[in-house]
Length: 376
Image (cartoon, rainbow, N blue to C red; front, side, top):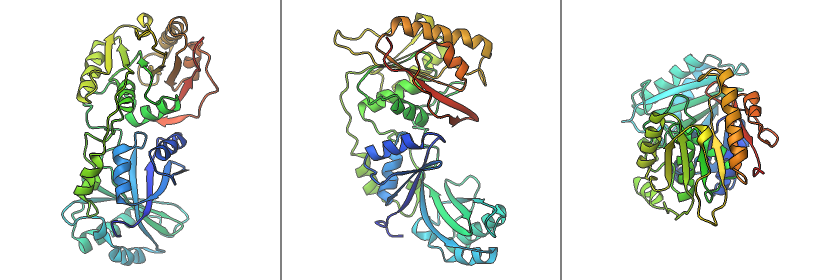
């Protein structure tokens, strides 16, 4: 696999958010991006892999499809795996782990036995150590006797931006927050208010979008430990970061003092202290931020407790009702996005929601974004 060869790149998305991720990929220049179940595929080279990891806000991981062959039994898998050009992508001095998924339509259906063959091929032909804690994951999918190999180029999930150490009890993942902001029509030029901000995910993501910051600027990636990595080209790509000036400001609040402290520290670490303001108060004390006389209303986006993991559901109806009442009486002209797993709780706000979006899998629950147009 030459450095300039193109291959299939697979961007994994939170299930239900594939189309939103595809729109983001096209917007930042991945023109051939297409949705498939579980994510987005596109053709590209290693520079595209690096750029996807660095710049995409909505992707959960970036997988590079490094090759495939047919195998009808384990001996054939073993033989072909030994001839596979592992050294084009993997380094002998970096440990590797192998993960296999199979389906019933394949003659090789035992994932564990297939994994052992690939591990042995990599360790004996390339000389790399096999370890369950390895930084590099090779993923083998066997479907209809076709063995397709991918390598996870991200390492830690891309929602880990690298500058956020403190998280609350039921955090919204950063990549999912970015996709919900996009679905709400947020492009970075309006204020955002989150009245139950927890560790500050929505307001920090919104401020980063407004400034034009790369989401992966503060972290490292698995691809930096691969044979295909070019550190000079990578540094040149990172240097393309151009921040924008923005007059928009981002306001989080929470009744919990620990959350306010946490969100403030996270915004500071992200270099956004001048754009993000976090205060402590209850939802019923929420008022629109004081904007300049020409200041336009913006977006209120909130991920309240659902009752599934945090809080007693019966008590939550009152909380949602108070939120709806506050927004209807004080936030005329603002749009609202509420993320919850419970339609009945969303309805308790009495807000004029648009038709509901599709459910999204998140932490074992199905959640939805409930949106309004500008409030009367």
